[in-house]
Image 1: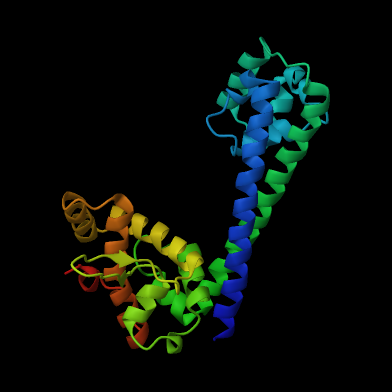
Image 2: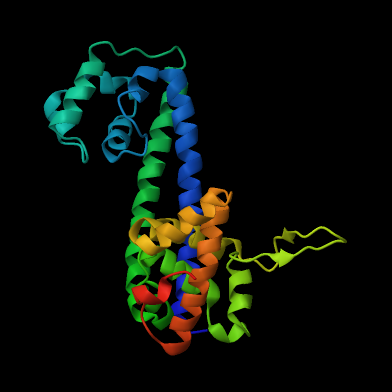
Length: 265
């Protein structure tokens, strides 16, 4: 395996772990905040908002955010004039439950942890983008519309080298874009193979869904599968199976993506 791909495997796996942790901490934070001050939670449409997290993390006692002045609010990263006005509107009617003295510090700690995780994920994104430029495999995959450095890096890291696969069908199975026949008597069916790399499959599902939005021919193929009765995920996998053939050809020939090569048949 090329060194760059081995590094991509480690970095993207680490990134996936941190993203998962961030999601769990955010869920806990929102649950605690809903119990302590639902009005405060209500000022944001998304708790992952940078300004909102900095607001929660800026005081040891969360109740003190109700008395922060406009100038102080504007000094927080991610808080602009409009957001400061929204916060001040909440401050006029701010209230906290009796749990605030002991649950509040948990919310503050979780907000700070999410900010820390966001910083670590951003640093990994920067490192991954640099490795994608150095990796021949990731560089080629990254030219496919919708794939992007993170998904391309994750795929290159999990694939490692094409020498592991005898055919593109084997690669398709590994990436979770193909099923195995499961025939019994008069019934025909399919079953998911055990050889699937779940990380690579997740990266493919995200990348292909984005690809659909950027390439009209692929969008038409997706819509065709939906009209045939396929679910969203089934249609995405069907298109992904076509794109595996494209990826295999690209990597074998050492070529970048060409739109005409990705038109599904």
